[in-house]
Amino acid sequence: MSGSAFIEGADKVERAAAELHERTRALVAVVVATREQRRADAPIAQMVADAVALGAVTARRAVEDAWRAYAASVSELRAATVRMLVDETGMTFTDVARVLGISRQMASRLYASS
Image (cartoon, rainbow, N blue to C red):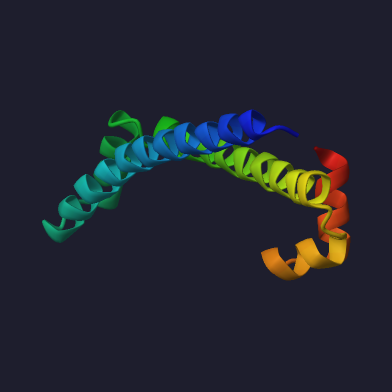
């Protein structure tokens, strides 16, 4: 795993985090609007209908999809990091595990997945 692969992985995490942020922001906007309706004692049926009309279902699904993409990008970066520590510095899985605060078995799995 080269340094450029690590940089690409970090870039992917950054993009995925930005996407997750945007998707979460959109969902929170719907939640806030619904909360304000509740504060105004709106009927629950009206609140739900309005939330759906504002895109609550789509927004929730978009957050879930963005979260999965973010988690996958972080996993890929972790794997690249483990591979670089082992291949470029000669660290053992035990050393890597200690540095990263993970089990030796997890270090081995991450190395194998990269």
